[in-house]
Amino acid sequence: MRHIWLDCDPGHDDAMAIMLAIFCDDSHLLGISTVHGNASADNTVNNAARCLYAFAAPQNVLVYPGAVKPLIRPARHDPEIHGIDGLGGVQGLPSADHPDVVARLAIDKQGRPVKAIEGIAKAIRDVWNDGAGPQITLISSGPMTNIALFVSVYPELLGGIEEMVFMGGGVGRGNRTPSAEFNILCDPEAAQIVLKVPVRKTMIPINVTHTAIVTKDVLCQLLCPGSVLVEGKLPPASSNLRHMLSTLIGYFADSYKLIFGFMDGPPLHDALTIAYALYPELFSCKRYRVDVELGGAHTSGETVVDLRGYYACDETWGVTGKNCIVAEKVDAKRFFGLMLDCIARCDKVTPLNSQSSAE
Image (cartoon, rainbow, N blue to C red; front, side, top):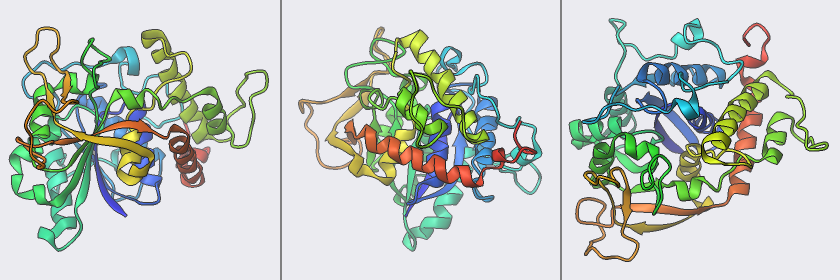
């Protein structure tokens, strides 16, 4: 059992990460913090709460709003990929003002939102208990502004973190500039702060996530388990949940086809962070020195991975060390098997499958 905190910016693929964090066998999801990124911070916090309700998360798993902009740079969002609200095209999710969605937002005794770094700090204190309990795994599937703020404000709690896992960066490639991946590009200074923290870290780059493609065959099983494509046509959804997820994947697929030319389906980037945290045997990885380019006119936001060992590094995880494990390959077939298993579990308990709850 791994105690997980997920920091995210939902986002279609973040929504799938939330579902895996709830339903994977070896996961104990402590809470979710949200950050600017795929959409505005107001939208990402609402989307996370909508997902927690739709996926029937335990009632004590709440959403904690975080940074509304990067540390230094102007905020940037990605409506071309995710729509204005971050979950463009999704059908069947309740609205943000649904009372059961509002109930998923963390508030204090005065009715004010509890902020991301406070939620993370409390979770670590409660679970780790100054070394008397287990450490947590801190996962980031969006810009790392919240994580950078947390490690800067609460350095005394770093001992309670077993590992940081983040989706972001690329090895020799980008997806929003020729050299920079979107999550890192949104707040490169925050990413560099996190990479310098003396805690074990794992990077899931786009080199790997671009191999985890939701093909038509996968989508067929998502819609109706055990069905087959007939003349290339997908079957109807066998439940409200599966219809909702198919619209989520479908919109994402259309965006990736139009913007990036992905013809076989969209990559499910962010869900791979959960898969790695719980089942690292699905991945092939290698440890390197990784830094973020902060000042390049053409390369700002690039993750610079020292593949050939040019820098003299020690075995620590911080400023002087090989500071990051970098995923190089994933067993996509097993990953999608895991995802489909989680959907089947969710399908049994989601309120979306009650006609009175589905919209």
